[in-house]
Image 1 (cartoon, one colour):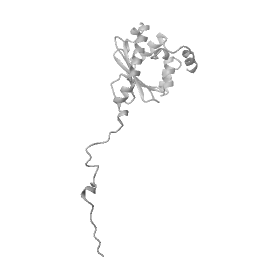
Image 2 (cartoon, helix red, strand yellow):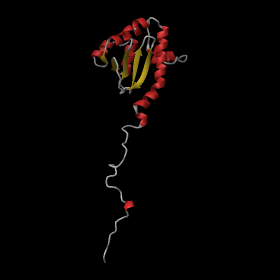
Image 3 (cartoon, helix red, strand yellow):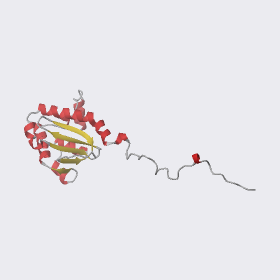
Image 4 (cartoon, one colour):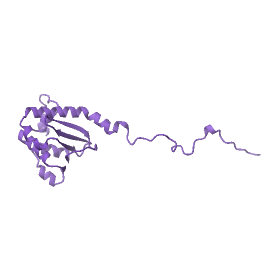
Length: 181
């Protein structure tokens, strides 16, 4: 018996190098993880923090003089355990706070990184920033003058982190937060 093999029709054959012919490339990350999408998602937080900063500056007019060394500079503060950073830009009229992905590039005058708990205790004046810096828990890169001016202004005005919350606390919540802090 004679066997003959017939090849399949051409329309059934797959090209040997399918991916070489593909006219596209897969994106490195899904679109919802892009830096642009993250900035859009963080925009409401940035707006609320900016309004909060301006409210504090209006309520404490003496801060303007104390913040002269920090004017026209950008201070980036990043809690190490979160993927977000906060850029504080102080201007003559007030300032802005921008929440952005920690990995976002951009020119800054000073970068501050530390665990969130360390940042909050330094902000409250309960922890010594110098000790945290020399123990390498707090990392500071760049110009020190704007950061020192900001810290001194916060201390002189007697502010704590609750003063910078974007929304007023509901009744009774302040006592609860004090117990948790």
